[in-house]
Length: 536
Image 1 (cartoon, rainbow, N blue to C red):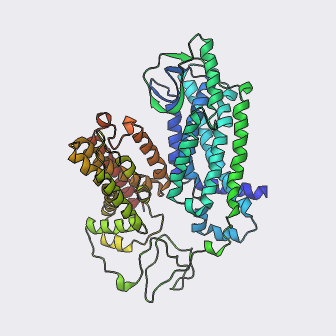
Image 2 (cartoon, rainbow, N blue to C red; image 1 turned 30 degrees about the vertical axis):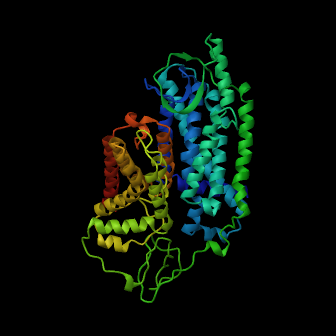
């Protein structure tokens, strides 16, 4: 049993580490490690201690990078840990597993183990970065491996184990498998992980023991500790007035974090196996897609290869089943495509694909517009605007890839140029953006807030471009569903560098700069598409 679970976990990890999303999150983790403990004169910090800064001892560098990794990977890592079970179901692996004696508990345990290997590989790279930073900084040449790694073992790894268990659980819950699950997890992350910095609630980040130990060191140096405050989050602060020499958590101070870590590990296993209550190991008839129903004389097929359906109608291989975004395959309803069609024709096709199955979305957009028109602007912005740009997030996350396997022969025939198709896909994402910001923009223009209106329009260009780039690079929705909530959270908290809508007024980036960034992201999409097309 243990051998089967280990083999399943290792095989799944090896497959997932080849995916672009893994590389993107890994690079983001390493970059965060360099920001958490910068080698140069950067004032960017992940762990804030009022106006003080710690010397780069093994314990300090290990702690700040471990805390940064815990906050980042508990959100971004959740995005790449999810989707393993639906991927097995859609790719036909589930049918093979249904024919084996492996139990559903063993299967879920294997997926949980795969998630742990995923997170463990990133933590190993982050710990190596922390060691390199300490040696390059030169504050302390003494390397204490125990104090360097202890925060990872006591704090980050148990928290990510709980995240790994939740990722398995979400994959077994039909309502949380898709983009809605990402939004739900973002709310959970805000409450449990960021909320762990406050005095109440579970101490998931070990902040109580860490801050108590640092306070003792500061008090021993003769400084007052009454006004010293702590926080975890990426900020830039130029008010550093002094340093403190904190050796880090030692074995004698590990009791509290160790107890919390053990509880998290036990909870993680229970959460991962909880899905066995309704997960049927791909045995049920409901997990087998219905065979393709072709009308007499129909010849349309679903792109993406063979192997998931029954015998082909022409006697060779297997025909794929119909997906949720397939077009009707009745030749009588198809109009022959014109060669060299316009971008406008391609835009209509892309928009049809983007909003297919989302009829209620336009009703929500209309309700947002009506609410925005009925509410007067509040200062330099509009109160409805930040929440309006959340409504299309699940539509935007479908940009840049064909995760649903939609049939696009009509579209490709009408617009054979890859450049035109890419432009059409980008414009299709801008249409819903303009729909949700139209109401606030009208009210802002009526109030004479032209800069705020321009900022809203620039943000409506930036977000679809970001979604298109994320989907094109990773060929999936997870990266955008992870990055955009972070960007939105920084915007509503008036982090000036992240205020893409200009809600903070004159302190926000200029609308022209935001529009320029949107254009740069769009050029990145075109470049990636051109490279892939040229290397086919």
